[in-house]
Amino acid sequence: MPTSKSLPRTLDTWLQQLGKLPLPIEQQQHVRLRRILADSRLNWREIAEAIEASPSFALQVLREVNQSGNSLSAPAESVETALSRLGLTRCEALLNLAPALPEQDIPLAFRQILLISQHASQQARGLFGARLARLWNELHGCSLLFLAPVWPLLYAHPELFDAWEQRVLLKGERPAAVEQELLGVPLIQLCIKLAERWRLPEWIVRGYRLLERDRRQLVKALHIARDNEHPLHQQQMLDADIPLRHWLTHPSNCVLLANGLAVSAHHAWDTAHSLRWQRLTGLYLQIPLSELQQEVHQHAVSSARLSHDAALWHPAQALIWPWHVHRLKPAVSAPPPPKRDALALWRQHCARLLAEPSSFANVLQLTACARDALQACGMQRILVLLADRTHTRLQVQQAAGLDASAASLSLDPTQSQVLRRLLDAPGQLRLTPGNVAQFSALLPGHLKALFPSEHLLLRSLANNGRVVLLLVADQSGQPLNDVSLQAVGKTAQCIERALGSFSRRGR
Image (cartoon, rainbow, N blue to C red; front, side):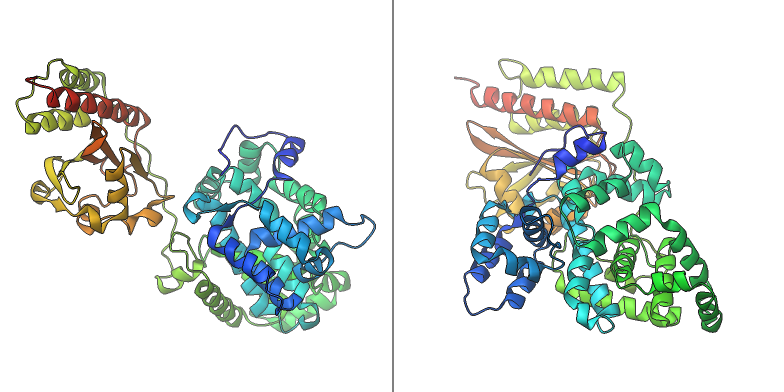
């Protein structure tokens, strides 16, 4: 996975970074694709459908055939066409070049944008498939790949997705201003240039050009779409503007509509942004808004059934919630760093831990000093657990900021994959909103009940190469303060030194 570095600030540097960036394929998908490409019993259509189930590889197939082919020939408009031009041998070679990564090593933001693209494809299939049966391959492929220019961006810089959610969807900041601040260039311009560079199908390029250069038609159509309760009046207005009516009914607009519905639903179903796309789609299909919404919700549920990644968000989940409830919550700011007096006390505790020879008479005194040091550096809820010799039990030695029942907590590491890994070797796991869904199910229920938090730190400490202590701490569910995090790291080093010194006492 690429590490997030300083972001480019010009269109050329963005294109240079993203234009040829290889996109990952989840390991099991990679194995399945290899098997399918080697199956001589399958026809082109069946192989293309299997490739489309892995959107990042579908993009690489289309990108490869359109960039390496004759520039005077028409670009392949679908994965099936691209596959027939590329051939199975070159397709297998392309698959071998694609990074095959475990799911947990693929950024969550990248996996989420692929899910949004798959949701858009399902909306296109359900809403427009019957109308555009002769153009089915183009409709499906273009709907799936419309957001493809954004995929490498979020693979290389996944933190941009959280920033977009918080600032554009939640706080309502102007997208253009946020894009300029984060990227240095308008996102639509970047998408157009990547789509043109990759020679993506014309329907995709046409949709981006509409959003950038020809918004006048879109605004006029949205104005008519608002009058959804009077379909006769809407039809009269369209009849009075023949160019607008011809533009509206162009098949390529289905790709834009399906993606507009999917992206806007990612936030909520009842926002003004989502309602605009629903009304515009209703105008295209010439059906009432209530009927359109029912269809869109049904197709969202169908899309969710195809997705089995519990770490990702699918808008269909919100259909069972009260209408006014939204998934996104305001970002909680981290608590202030520890004050000077607290840090002075922390240094005293660390000095005691580092003292030679050890001043502790027993392990209980040592772990009490460790707990006090963690409190002084800003941790508000703390557990210090001692591992037995066989690593089959973790027993609480110290607790702070928790219910009294925490003092008698005993955990069986064999029941938790996370605890087993932390006991195998000293290490650290930091839970955040971005990975909590991935790891929460792997933590013991009693531990999660004590720490109902999306911001949690687990760190195992060793003596003579064997893990003996596990620290669990947070700041009462708030994002962890950077100063406190650094202090916790130094405290852990001091505790390990104290463990070594304590084990040598009396020799």
